[in-house]
Image (cartoon, rainbow, N blue to C red; front, side, top):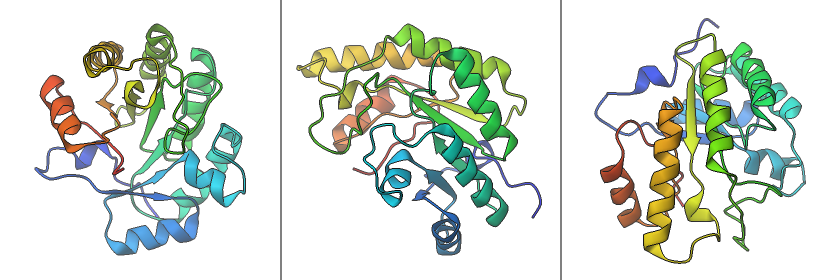
Length: 215
């Protein structure tokens, strides 16, 4: 099919990039035909179509298998939910290389900590991983990628966690994590925007590309 365009190559066009969540070849083909710019393979969809809860049951092997099949079938960039990197930094590097090898364009790595729970299914009682550990994973992945077009996206989880109860504390923690991940080399940030006002605040605080889920 030829080399697919990278997600990075779509930046700077003066408009949002629309990414549709998919879980197999058929859904990916539908997204491509519908005119989306890219597809996203997320743990939520992968879990549901396999009949399991989104609590980390779907492992990286299944993720790589799905990405390989989708990559063979469509000519769009693929963004992948990389969870917490599936382990320590050296484990994250291993699975990043596997996804890079099958033609994935970008991954986003979060700091939700363990035990993992999907932030979009109540109760939202997530913990947060130490930001230095998440930053170490991002730093290692950035240093080991072979395709410079491959994007590594940091996903600060402050707004889906129960660690902070006040808005001021949430903002301070999110900004601290966002800056740490950017300093580690993240190519973009992935805030969760429950409200338009939050999206505006995120945009006002950091430079570079932002990605979010319409919630």
